[in-house]
Length: 136
Image (cartoon, rainbow, N blue to C red; front, side, top):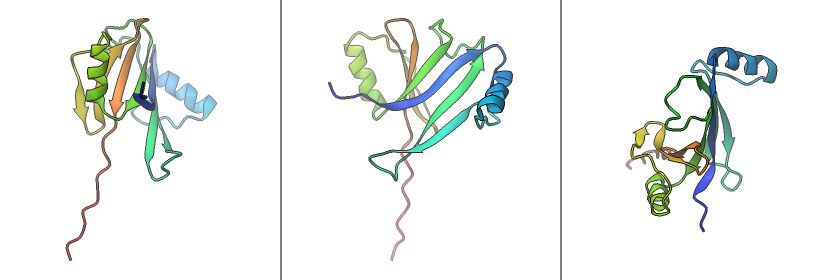
């Protein structure tokens, strides 16, 4: 089977006090926690060093509905190259696929549940904007 996931997009978890947890990680582990409450680890692809990427770390409020229908306290986010294709393949394999998808300036998002009831977010990052060629 061809690999569907291209990397880890993020780790999201519930916290009773997300600001306090973010401050703890900033103080004790040096995480550069941003105003929005999490951090984005920037990196470059080893095979294509000009390709940039990021992995997100973010605590969520303990009462968030974002992980539903899972009752688990965390959610993994995996990068995929073609969200629509991956979701269609998973449906054929009888994997539970959330009928809702989302598209924004941050990319395309879809959700599935694994066999243990964990919500998994699949993320197709936005395509880099191409520079317009100047007319001669």
